[in-house]
Length: 436
Image (cartoon, rainbow, N blue to C red):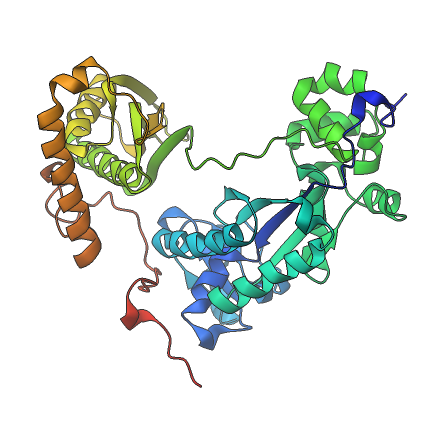
């Protein structure tokens, strides 16, 4: 039998003083490109993955043409040309900047937790719950007016239901509330496939279908004991969230657990020097992001791999802890080189590399250990050097000054971006004209 959610055990269920809202930007990558190309408004747009591989974003008009997500661009190139579809390479600097503006707008209205580059969970406080639709409308209107892109908002007592509500909002009028006390709640869940539930992956869906659990309503009415046995505590939390019990905490902290910089190469590379330039470049980029967010890392990993389809497939990872948490590029680069030397093998054609910083901590309030105190003067000099480097690159453009380990000339391993837009939202010369 399903759990009795009216019992004392679940006394906080359907707390009228707490609601979650999921704000999700519509067709985000395509919408960002359209911002700087008003001539493409209401026209089909697609954005490609790294190295101009597969389609990872589509505008509404592109979806109406039946262009499938994940389709390799070269397979439908003639179709795209025939229908005058605008094709763009991924421009992560542009998307990141627009995302930051969107998150700033949401955060000014209510506490928010970014979930991805185009999604954020918001917590409706007591004073906002009664006017949740008005708050959602305010968020949508400000993002539309101040940034220029549209978004959908799903509101519910739990994150999982908010996800489903957002899914419905995209098909409706942009805002949707989903609540177990709604009269049509059962009917709504009966029309949602079980695979659409947040946290239910492909393998879990296949398993549930074998037990004739086909819809969100079927899963909601599955006994707790059975769910915990077959899907552990994570599945149990998902079940309770469908009942309106908030089990997934929100994290308003800006401190991530790890930071990754990784890219597939434009061409396969074999030499250690080229691979070192790539790893060094990722290390520089990652350390800049740490400093920008006022964070430090306790250690790092380096990862390299060949194509998984290669006859002699090879992949490996090596990691090391820093003497003390830092964000100093100059100190990180020798560590990255040493890790790469540990795992590099000759006569392999590598297609991807990356670095990962772990043990991330905020700079402020971090207690310095004995080793860092010994080198305090040296550390202060390094901080000034990194500040000067970041300031110059911010003012005059990325890589105005760079480390020699990154390579002097443009390397062949750089990502292929034949259709990349040149727009920089921080450059006033790139902003579209406004007609009053």
